Amino acid sequence: MMTEDTICAISTAPGMGAIAVIRMAGDKAFEIGDKVFRPAGKAKKLHAQNANSTHFGTIYDNDKDLDEVLVTIFKAPHSFTGENIIEIACHGAPYIQQQLLQLLVKKGARLARPGEFTQRAFLNGKMDLSQAEAVADLIASENEAARRVALQQMRGGFSSELSTLRERLLWFISLIELELDFSEEDVEFANRDELTKLVNEIEAHLSRLISSFSLGNAIKNGIPVAIVGHTNAGKSTLLNALLNEERAIVSEIHGTTRDAIEDTINIGGVTFRFIDTAGIRTTADKIENLGIKLTYSKMSQAAIVLLLVDATDSQQKINDAINNVRSKIDADRQHLIVVVNKIDLIDQPQSFAITAMPKPTQNSSIVTISARKQINMDQLTNELLKTISLHAIDNNEVVVTNARHHEALTNALEGIVRVKEGLASGISGDFLAQDIREVLHHLGTITGQISTDEVLGNIFKNFCIGK
Image (cartoon, rainbow, N blue to C red; front, top):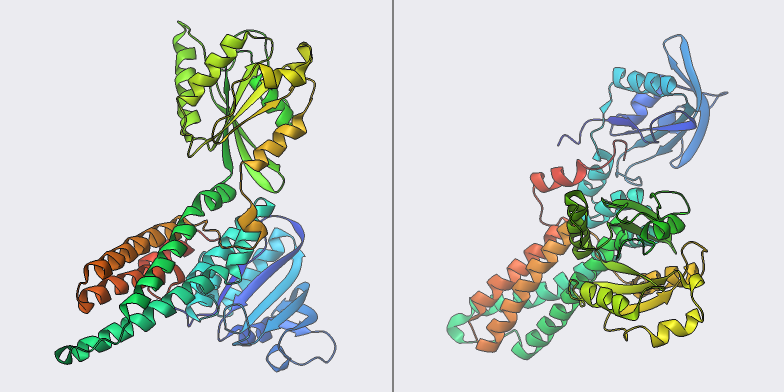
């Protein structure tokens, strides 16, 4: 990548707005800026102004004034990319934005590639690779939990933990390799008991980070919730009640829903992705059977399964429905919430949940509601939030949200396990050193201490232009 060029791009969202910001970064940023910006009054040229200052004036092209703007300057190395940066705040008409951008290109800048500003920040040591990726996550965050996790990572929380692990491993590998230099003298510099203790600590640490990915991935992409049950249990009514809109068709005719209907809602700062599925029953209708098959598929993919049962049905029918769904989900991975619907149609609805329902098992719970009358809907949303452990986020613990990081951590854990097994079997230091170097390699790929142009290209191509 050519970092010597001066680059420019529109950094605000496309379209019309009150104000737009055009960013320019590179060695010639001030030189180009002085060619197109006329400060108000008798103010000095941009290159002579103090860093981190804002100036009012006019953008012009020869004898033609284009717009009145505010220009903010940042001087290297104290800027986002570590280079000289100019940010032009102009009026937000798309025509004006394009005219200013074309003017900067005509004066010597070039259009930035996707993510090029952030990539330059990484290449210039302003942030590591995991922090750079957190920038994209922060921009894309759609709920409070995702924002908090991305901001914590962007500020270096994840990087700090990995740096500590690498430093401790580097210390030991240096001692082991020192032993190899004195192999003929049979000298042991690295205490094997201390190394075993360190390996156990790192193994536990990596396992915790890896296990946090299930939460992080759900927060980042939305937690899939499958709404399942017999026909006419009220699944579509529940979806509409949760979304507060008529999203799904509600009918007294059995088998109305034949496909999966999906939509999202933010509850307590967490995005849930609800999937209304076809009702489960025995039918000769081929199309409906395809929908029921899809129901089981969506159920297996969900993190939470909402099983709707009709409070007016017989206890045997309810129990059969619960047992059927329990047999098809993974109790260790998925949470089952049995939702007793239509409690407005029965007597003593509160005692119903206690006397008529099977006892909850691991990762399961029971809620009684009326989706049509909006009774106890707050209890259902609270139960949904309980299934997601936000303890780690509340305590600012590191939560892994990136699949690339998860893969690297998994590979690092496999390496640590090999080191642990090698210590137990008493293998020679050169083999231990090789396994530790492999662990260091995988940890280094996360922060960018070890990277390739291909990896960087894949990461930054997904950024928006101007960031």
